[in-house]
Length: 243
Image (cartoon, rainbow, N blue to C red):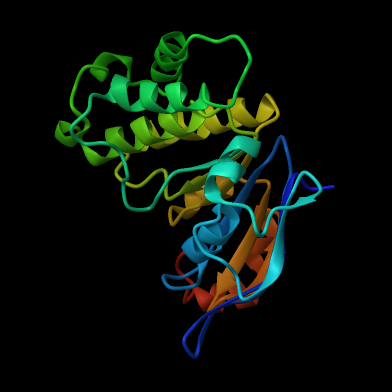
């Protein structure tokens, strides 16, 4: 059974269906991709999963529990964490302080014995930004700020991590490092759901890929099948999934 799933999720904005019976499964220990053209509904589905948006119908299930009516805070406590397409870091705080805020917040419900400061240091090292730990996030390049946001999400000790365009702003070397980090994280049992426009990154990192177009899932499968799917090629005008 998938750790995280949406079942027939429908979201309407006025007369527009942003999501139409959108179903997805995210397994522990795997990177699952969610791709589609701009406006396909990817971030909308993220918002439904994390509780920022209530669906008109359908369910969100986490570890066998229907969490559709639970608040974002409750979902975070259960182990769902995310990053955002538009950076949501605290720009007037340092990179270290951003991660420490999340680790301290986790103390509100996590009764295990851990030191928030030590967690912050470990995560800054893990994502490769320890050398800019004292810099204000507002002064950092976008790619580096995204790594701060990733470290902050990991500070919540999630079981499922949702990443919204994590490679945006990263150079090629940093993108490769990000891919390697995700592989290490899932090897430890984390479930990752990845929204990304960098198709080489997606195809090289994800084991299963879902494709959204105008709110509908038009394909699902391993990367090699997705690249050859005529419906996917049509959705991307034949360009985004080119080998």
